[in-house]
Image 1: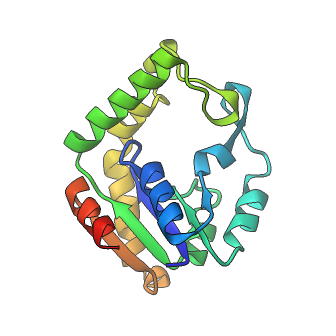
Image 2: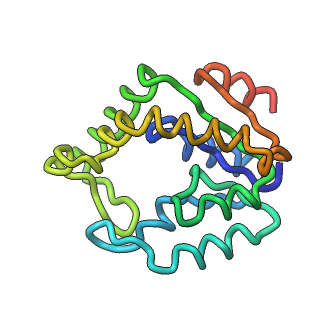
Length: 172
């Protein structure tokens, strides 16, 4: 495990797990949303492919993302391990709702200086809406990639419940 992708739907705990693994394994951690969103009003990094190419070219890293479409294949081609947090909606939704509520109330500064807002809750782009609407599509995309012979050499760890992931992490 030298180049790890932690994948799953919004709210699964990708960033938390990636940070923990980074500390335990001594791997540099890169938060994909921080690379993707780099300015006010959720501005998208116009050098995303270049920046992710540079990160993926490294010999050791951990990234918390399936990968945005522009860079997805690049990340999957370079990774040696995929850790899939394949949790059901009943696990994901309370997590993402609590996190978004906390971020909104505390006005926590996120990627590119942005914040979650009360009006943002009405947007289809809000993490709660996104987690709900993209759950099935994300599962199918990861499943398709795992079955793709091109990614056959990847070591894939799939966890269906946080307790399973916690047990694996405790044994690591």
